[in-house]
Amino acid sequence: MLLGMPALVEFASINQLVELCLKLNLNFIELNMNLPYNFIQNLPPLELKRITKETNIKFTMHMPDEADLGSFYESVRRGYVQLFSDTLDWAKEAGVDLLNLHIQEGAKMTMPDRKIYIYDQYSEEFTKNFADSIKILSKKAQENNIILAIENSSNFGKHYIQDTLDKVLTFPNIKLTWDTGHDGVSGFKDQEYLLKKQDYIAHMHLHDAKGYNDHQALFDGELDINKLLGFAQSKNIRVLIEVKTKEALVKSINRLS
Figure 1 (spheres, rainbow, N blue to C red):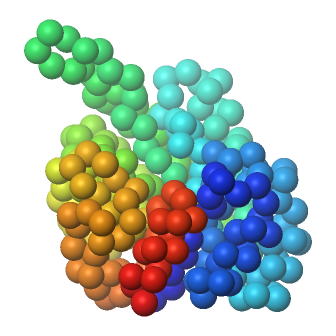
Figure 2: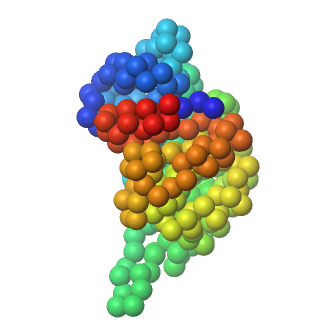
């Protein structure tokens, strides 16, 4: 089982990430396109290949959190599809074999007695938009031998999200990421769907959660970390220790050791 670390907001260069990854004896780094120093235009593919050749550290990429492939605005959707397409081309050159992405639950209206999700109210249009985007990207992902893994973000319990995932998981190279902390914050509603689709899980974001607080250091929260690691090992999937600070990362790896 391969263990990795995320790009950290407290760092400003890939060299800092590589240095810490080597120090902790980890196998891969998940770069993050929310951070400017991880934008693909700032990371020459040949530089990543050189790092992998010299250190054996591999890379995955986390797409921008706000990227909405199901947007009702065609120009917005087209822009995000282009960004993903450009990233797939970059990833092929850089030797990156997995892109992690979110599926957005969309805007919501707070009523006196409930919340109405607009993508739920117009679920057929949302599902079509998201599926049309993924179909385009799936073709390029298959050509480039790259996995697109859709991460739960405390929203896999929603029926319109599940219906959309059911459709896109039929496309080549489309898989799932199990984010354990987001799952815990959802009251484990995400997990119900994930376990039904466990053969599609290709990636894990492992962090602890306590109540509504996730991204906690491992064993600081309420999740059964050993059970989750056992699942990942049984499925032979990579595990990203997705805590957000160097201190929490070092603490988590030391505890695993």
